[in-house]
Length: 295
Image (cartoon, rainbow, N blue to C red; front, side, top):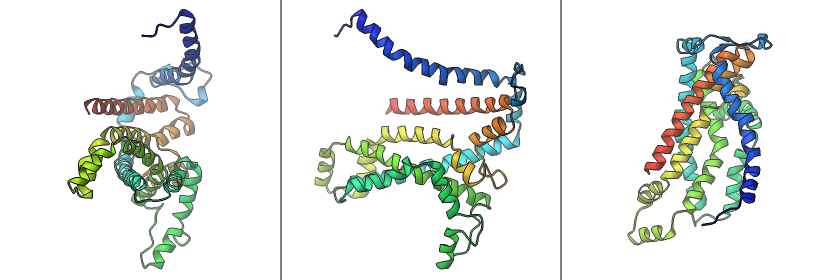
């Protein structure tokens, strides 16, 4: 057992203090303020006035609003489709790159990871051009017509507009999921696969009976982080569908918060939305931790 001297302990605290100060100033205090402001009437127009305490008024207003539940539904649909498909595709990409049959692995790793480190603003702008609302000028529709398929109003139809948002988010995030799964695959001993080869295990059983079970901790981690990230989607919605078009079908919790707080100036209501998001994400984090501990 190593026993640190008082001087060494003092040095440890000095190194930690700046991190705690940053956490307190930029994370903890704003969080506390958000909880407080969610109970107050406070707007951008009266920023110099003290907040007026209104209790749970904004929470009752939100839970009784059809618009809020529509936004919750949109966020749920986005999460339900984007997260599972992203995990499956990311795992398949990782297995492909990890395979001994694949050459130039570094090239594929870099090529598949580049979208993740690219700017979401740039990515969303490119996809908006590809799925242009102008049917005749849409690059994707031009390709459709050349192979005999009908044109689709990608950004004008509520269902297709959400599909585009999901597609953009998945395309950009697959590289990150692939890298995390690659780390998990590297942690699996080759002896296990060699024993499976001796028993003539089929590739499907090798995937479902060996690889997938041994990657459970990695999958639980990605499931939690990707779900949390899906509840915070903002940029593609703001750029591709102008913050929720058509008819609010792509509006999410974060875009709704932005509209209420920064566009409408209702900081109290926006704070209430942020608290609801905080509670949802906290519950998801606890569930993920328990699933990981049980595993």
